[in-house]
Length: 138
Image (cartoon, rainbow, N blue to C red; front, side):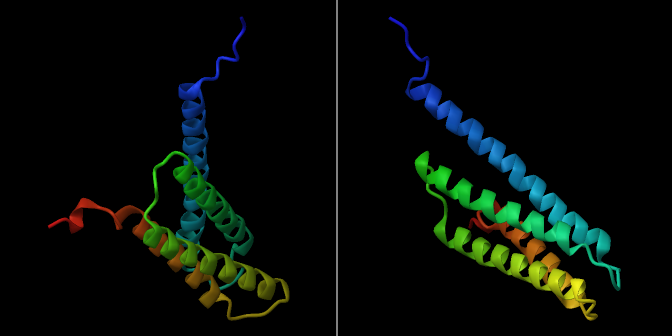
């Protein structure tokens, strides 16, 4: 009798592979978002909003997928942490979209949108690393 070779363990392994692949893509999005911000902090014009916008989209989509996979693998995420990170990531995306649209129209005073998006992305990174850190254990 032929079998598909996909038993309960193989399915779990496949889900883990998908999860780790999404983590890799999520981290790449974060690297682009924060990296572009840090390298462009001193700019006074011509902000890289398009790169930041797409990196923010990658962050949101992969973050949502990672939460879903976490639930599927019975690895329930910290809902408070995920809620805060989702709100920050959404704000980053909104700031990049507004900045990109205004820059395309030739408007000036775009620095607040650039710094808001980059600053909130950096805060989101800090939350990702330190929210459950052992630093807070008494």
